[in-house]
Amino acid sequence: MANTLTVDINDQGTATFTLNRPEVHNALNGELIDELTAALTKLSDENDVRVMVLAANGNSFSAGADLAWMRKMADASEQENYKDAMHLAELLQVIDGLPKPTIARIHGAVYGGAIGLVACCDIAIASERAIFSLSEAKLGLVPAVISPYVVRAIGGRAARRYFQSAERFDAAQARHIGLIHEVVAADKLDASMQGLIDHLLTAGPDAQAAAKRLIEEVDGTRIDDKLVQSTAQMNARMRKTKEGREGISAFLDKRKPTWRK
Image (cartoon, rainbow, N blue to C red; front, side, top):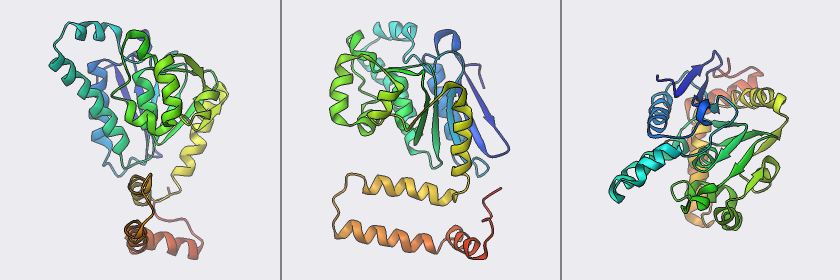
């Protein structure tokens, strides 16, 4: 693994993917995007990995797109820019579709494309000192690639403001509009992360993956006979899985299920 990204897996099964370009505030360039995509994909099906954390070294989570990289692409053709943009689009798809719980550990500046990374994670916890900005409009650009995930997280109403104003907003406002779930003191960030991970590890991994698929199916879907039947079928199917039977048996026997270390 190159120096732009580090990956660590602890004995709990938590894999931490750490952006490691602190000298440029972890700005996203082609190399970092491709490395992160490859690392996430490689570990997505590893049974020993239970939780995936996206973190960063240095003073910032990420300043968004690397300006040197953007300057280079400004001289490229539209087709070359499309191909380049698809690398970020593929990374976001990978994060969004991971079958394991994903958490963004956020501190410092979170600008531009980095907000897309946050929006793709299942859970986002931020230091009270974190600062956010959908800054693309200041460069005459739009946050197009990240928009499906950001609008899903914050809603169209908030997006109308922040996509156009490109203003900075703090962690409290990020929580208010739905971008993050929790704001904690800077010195409590790791403890809060660990508390959440402990909760996630009590749940069945197959159930967590199924829950993510379930949310995709029901979110924004009209409640009709087809959806009612589909959810009932999933309920019945999960009860008959090996994990479902073990979970119920463990509860009745007053013991921990086998997936809990």
